[in-house]
Length: 278
Image (cartoon, rainbow, N blue to C red):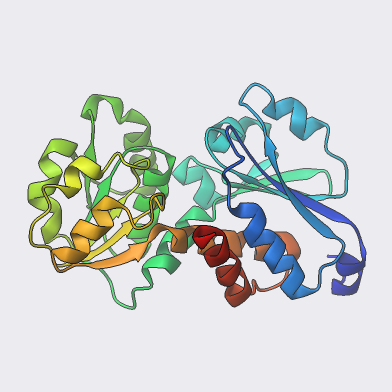
């Protein structure tokens, strides 16, 4: 492994890839980390890359690259391009982090870490609900399993279209119950933890029907801030964890993996808050 002194003196590059990607807050988080860590030779960019362009982009990278952050729609597309996929990312079926180990490309998943750290629970959970069936929902199932819940209820638009999530759950040894989103408002209030992985505004119709709740809500959407579901959840008596906390913690784990340094959470959190309130 390279010494800390060599890594800090050398030029290293990293970037977030996605399509679209201009809205990404990852550059603010990673750049704040580099500044706080004194990594003056490191740079982090946002690069718009489509699924069709991904293979060519990765093939063109040189040995100054340390890592990539991946957002949608690239979290599955990248998997066949990698030399090794870490077990957690493989079972989840989603890679949001690529690490360059010489010429070897390693895929990892820090979304699971981000969800667990954002929830910040110090006890096992008995019941949980997940809204949505995409890549983040797969990571959520893994996070909930780590927290002690292996039979969450998953609410999806159409159960017949949740095959990818069902296969991921099977690989994890998790046994969710699948129901439609129409059933969610009457039921999610009873869960210890609810994680909404729906896109911005997609959960707004549910918010209008939320009544009494008892548990913790993590809405991974953070635009608008707060989301309608978060407002309704708090008004009904529940605890809300804002979606940017997942973003912060998954990025912090990326920083650790890419640089070899513990992430400076306070500096990263301050930079994130500045961007969100700008």
